Figure: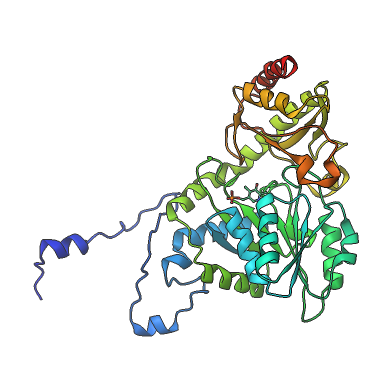
Length: 396
Ligand SMILES: *Cc1c(COP(=O)(O)O)cnc(C)c1O
C-alpha cells in the first residue's frame, strides 16, 4: 500500500493528533458512538461497567467519566452515573431497585413527576407506591413492610418546603433492613446542590441530583445524576441505565463541567439574595407565610438548622387567604424582572404558581402558593419589582 490515498479516504482518515505537550484547564469534549478496540482480545475482555475503559458511547467517554468523577467527589460519594434529565435519574433508581410485588415509599410533598412515576409503577407494573407525611421522621418505621425496598426523600420538598428528618428516616430504614433485604434510602438532593446538605454523612444510600439546576447554572442543559458509595448498588443502577439507553450528550457534559468551578459562589449568592427577598416578603401584609427552611416558622426548620449549612435560591410563599387565584395570577403577570417558568439554578429570577390546595389534602384551606427562584440580580431590584406587582394584586 502506498501513502497516496483517494480524497475520500483522506477525508475520513485524518492524520490529526492532539499536540504533544499540550495542557489546558478545560476537559476535552470527546464525542463517540463507536469506541475503537485495538484487537478482538480487547473486545472480548473489556467490561462496559469498568470505568477505567471505554466500550461504547452510550456508556460514556472521557468527558462524561470526568463529570461523573467530579460529581461523586462533590457529593462525598464514590460512584456516579449520568442520565439525560433529573427525572430520568429518578426513574433509573426506581427501575433498578423495584420489581413487581415490591413497595416504595414516597414523600407526599415530592417533586410531582416523581409522584407521577410512582403512581404509574403502581397502576401498570405491579409495584406498590405509598405516600408519607414528609415530617414523619423515625415514625416511618411503622410504614416499612417486608416488601419495602426503597424510600424516596426530598430535602426540602421543592414546592411546600418542609424539611424532613433524613437521619431519622435512614435509622428506621437500617433498623428494618435484613441481611438479604435492604431498605434503601434515596434523596433528591437538588435543592442543596450537594453543597448545603452532605447526604451520605446523614446515612443516605443514593443521592439523585437534577444537574439541570445549580450544576448547569445556565438554564440551558437538562441532565441528572445518581451517586452512591456502594459499588454493588451502582452496578444495579448501571444495569437499568444500560437497559434504558440513558446516554447523555458530551457537549452538555462540557457545559456542566464548565459551570462547576463557580457553583458554590453562585449558590451562596442565590442563598443570600433569597433570604433578603424572603425576609422582606415576610413583613408584608399580602403574605400569610414565607416557606423558607431558614425561617423559624417553616415546617422542619429545626432539622434544617441541625443538618444543613445553607439554603440556595428557592422558596415559596402563601398569600393571605383574602386573595384568590385571579389576583395572585395578576400579581405574577405584573412582575417584570421575574419571569414565569419552571426550574431554577440559573441567573434569572423565576416565579410560578402551584395549586397546593388540590395537590395536598392538608393544605386545602391555605391561601395561594407562589414559588420564587431568586436569581443573581440585585435583590433590591427584585424587591422593587415585587412591590410594584403587589400594587396590581391589590387593585385586582
Ligand atoms: C428539576 C427537578 C427535577 C428534575 O430535573 P429535570 O432535569 O428537569 O428532569 C427533579 N427534582 C427536583 C427537586 C427538581 O427541582
